[in-house]
Each structure stands twice: as structure tokens, then as C-alpha cells.
Image (cartoon, rainbow over all chains, first blue to last red; front, side, top):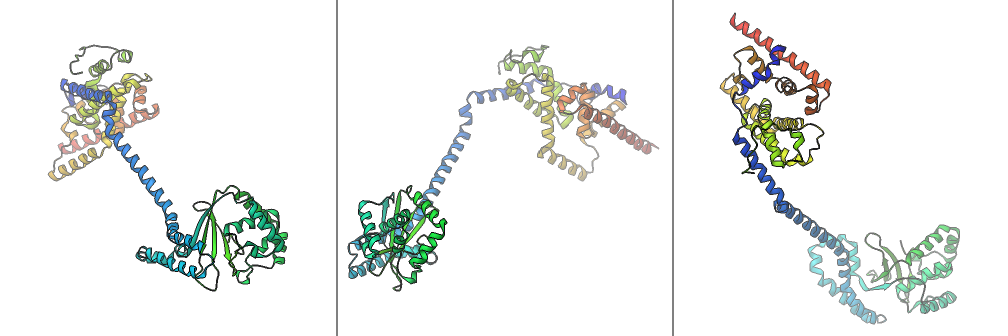
Length: 290
Length: 196
């Protein structure tokens, strides 16, 4: 068999074909194909323009889609604000009528009108409305303002108020201050280490859980971690550029109106809560950041 | 390209002209020297002249486009044979080929025909019988047998073309010969049985 295998070349060639198979026609086909390829490679852009155009179109679509998604996600919180914004315009009018209880009633009526004006939208999605606490809150907004940072140090006016307050311990000294300014005093007291004065800024109402001054001072002096936390917060406040103050009407007459000061971005928003006492003075809620 | 007339019968060393001659001319020399060999080699894999022609056309076009990348690490012959073998393997692995094989078998089974492509090549004498049996071997034995005996290549060259170890090539050659012997012996046994 080995001998026969050695002659396999001749045998196989004779067997598979005795005529040449690589003809002139084959050569011509190859030349034509090569000529086509060369033309394509000489015009790289025109040959690939379809691919380039489709990739570019895809990229543009992706960019637009990303921008749309980002704008939608950023619109969500702002739409919540705009729901409160309706109350804001009425709230501005309301600020002027702050001390007039009859005007307050007018404000609340207006506020109800605002609710009605956004009503159809809310009704169309009544389930969402019921489930969204934030929307309920925004319905009670009576004023909204933004304050530019830094929060500390205090200006001269506030320093005077602080000095008067720290001596008198009378919350009436805070009567002309808005919630943001009261918050400034609270952190200034922390910064000064005057925890007694800080305690005087809390709402003095047992229903809100404010402890006695002695208990508060004892806890603060025992727990150095609290002091460190407050110091860290104060350092952070120096970097914050703006604070949003929102005043809410408390629909339940048993409780008092309150305000929230918000700062931070996206998922890292901090809220500081203040409560308007019976004399109409803004005081700090016990555990304000809770 | 269309107007180009190749130098007929030239026996140029292609390894020496790559990079010095125009690409078109190099391809013409390649076609002159390897065209016929490659089409027959491809046929031993795919057993279809139409497919073998397509494969060889593709091989020369690939050579043209990749000629600039040829670094001369192997000879042009090894390079072009390897491209042909790879293209033939691709074809054998392709869905269309497998589908064709399957439908061929089914149609022949339905018609009750005994002849296959291989049987069309049935030899009148022992040498032709042997050659036809080589074509029936499994592809991994068939290709080394054909490269060694039909293309008369050295084991080292086969190693380079198939990217295999020397020992693997030798083992496959040995096993291919054994298989051939077994097939021929059994065929002859059957023939003897029929005649007696």
C-alpha cells in the first residue's frame, strides 16, 4: 500500500480531473473581484459612509435619550416644588399679612384654590396623591424662600439678637426672626459651646419631647460624640451655598405650624425642622434633623 | 487590472518579489504558480468544483488585501496553502455545507441510491481505489495524507500549514494509513464474499 500511496499524486490528479481546473475564466473573476476591492479601498469614506452614518445616528440618539432621561429625573423634584410654588405666590402675599389672622384665613382659602387648580392633575392620579406624603406636604406650603450661604458667622443684627437672647433667655427676643435666622442662632450657640442658650432655642412644649435644660446639658457634657458631630456639621455648613426654607401650615389644630430648612443635592438632602410657638415665634424642634 | 497581461510561464520566486513588484503582478505570479494546485487541494476537502473555485477566488483576494501584512515569517507557499486549508475548513464547518450533506443523504436514502460523491470516483484499478478511499477518510486524517502524499510536502511544512506539532502530524499519518488498510481490507473481504 505504501508504494501505491507514493503514486497518489498522479493517481489522484488523474482521478479527480485530467483537465486543468484553474481556467482563464477563474483568473478573470479573481481580477475583477480584486479591482472592486481596490476601488472600495481607494474611497474609504464613500464605501463606509453608511456604517459611519448609522453609528453617528445611534450616538446622537443615545445622547438625546440620555439628556431626556436626565432632564426628566431633574424635573421630578422641581415639579414637587412647583406644586408648592402655587402656594408660594399666595404665600408671598401671606407674608405681608403675617400678623393678621383674618388674612391668614384668606391665605388658606387661596391655598385651597391653588389645590383646586392642581386638582385635576392630582385627581387623575389620585392613588399617587394618596401615597405620596411629599405631595401632601407641598399642599400645605405657605411660604418658600431661598437663602444664600454661608450660614455662619452671624451678621451684626443676628449677633445682637443672640446676645440679647442669651442674657434674657426669653424667646420673645426672636420674634422678628425667620426660621433660617433661628437655625443660624442654634448653630452659632453650638459653635460657641453655649448649650444652655441652645436649649433655650428649642420649642418649650413637652408634647414635642424637648427635655429639661439640666438633662440636655448633662447629656451634652457627657457625650463628647454629640459635640464632635455638631462641630463636623458646622464645618460642612461653611461649604453649603444655599438653604431652602419652606413654611408649612399644620392642618391639625392641636399642633403648630412648622418650617423646614433644606440643603444638599439629590439623595443627600438634609432637613432642619423649626416650630412656630403659640406666640408666633420660630423655635427649634427637638431633634431638628431627625 | 482588466487590461493587465500576466507574464505567462514565468517561474519567479514569489518570496523575493513581494514588496518590490506591484501587488497585481505578484498576484498574477501566485495564480500562475499555485492556482491549479490550490483548486485541486480545495477540491479534496469540499469535493465540489464550484465550491473549490469559490474558495480559491477568495484565497487570492485575501492574498491581495493582506499582501502588505505578509512579513515573510513563512514561505509564500506555506502562507497561501494555509489560507486555502482554513477557507476549506470554514466551508466544511458552515451551516450550508452541513445542511447540503444532510439533504444529500436523505434524498439518496429515499431514492435508494448507493452512489455517493466518493463512489462516483470509484476506481477501476487498485491505485484508483486507494485514492478514492483516501477521500473517504475523516478530514483530520485525509488532510495530512493528502498534503503528504498528494502535495508531496514535508512533515515540517505540514506542521506549519496546519499549525500542529510534528508528532501529531506523524500520528495522524500513521493512523490514516491504518484506517485506509482497514477500509480496503474490509472492502476486499466484501467483494470476495460477493464473488464466491
